[in-house]
Image (cartoon, rainbow, N blue to C red):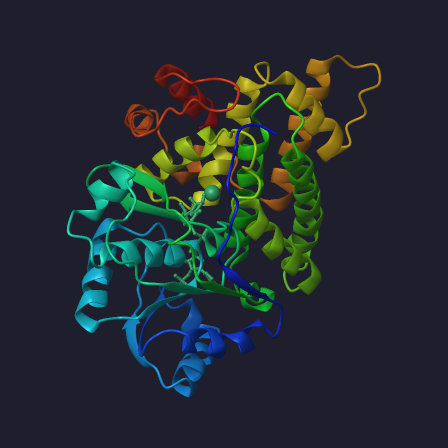
Length: 388
Ligand code: NZQ
Ligand code: ZN
């Protein structure tokens, strides 16, 4: 383990088919006015909206409606939501949806009483809030981002061609989250597998870094094996509760700050994926799947020992009679085969990336120190070309 760290996570989780029974008690701990944030209407079609409204009514709450949060939420929408919180003196923001709705709710919570431009302060300058923060609660309906138990908030600014994530401190984490795996049964298959790859990517981003012997890497390997196993069941049988509940739990632990303890991370797949998202508005998990193999094949030699371990431990590659390079390569071939099996996007051209917009996407990519190699802009361009 490296460095010194503080670990705490303030989010109360309620997991399982009866998790909603805890919503009333949680909302009662906050003031009178609740702003109900949701997306484009899936919760009205699958009954979750009615379910939540019944609880809010039984708790005697005044409800401010805030629907229409789009996938990849925009800064314009965030500004509208912040004004609504101020105008209605909202006491609790209840996000009912996937990562987009939850990320948006967190952005609104720190922007309502912010006297500076939130885009510049939080996302561009990466500062922390210095104003009152409106508490956020969550009923999760789509699995993948881990936003239900972290401080992440990813916002898109189309005018500037930027999609930027801010990881807020734990005073912005959701105060509580309801996780009922059955709520994810109606998620379309394409979104479900995009979420599965997002989870895998969160784990890999934190795994492919460092040269030490880290407890968190052993945890990461277990999470990856569970995810691979359950995703294979879920794509064939989407209403399989055991598989969907395992995927939901893995998603939360993949990005709730546990795996980053005591080691560095990589995050370049997310940096390139987010830049693709800024220019194409493509589904987040698919932007990651399209660039992962070109990226990992490019950096494999820089972190060879880790790619060998990944092959052996996560994919059961037999190393007998093979060089380290062959073993590492076999691990990436196994990853590729699984990606094709679950059905994620393998080509960024499907998502709107073209030879023409690659330079602009590279300009929108933040070049982090990363795990095993610090990429240059030209290397990002090459990875994007190979992803087409
Ligand atoms: O908008 P509605 O109508 O609700 O439909 C949504 C949306 O179209 C639909 N959906 C959600 N639950 C459903 C459902 N449809 C039927 N039944 C249900 N139960 O699914 C679609 C996608 O939803 P969205 O919230 O956009 O997906 P996801 O959870 O993947 O969130 C993506 C956003 O999270 C950010 C991404 O960049 C992206 O903007 N991320 C947030 C992170 C964080 N907070 O830590 C980290 C991630 O790396 C990621 O960047
Ligand atoms: Zn992600």
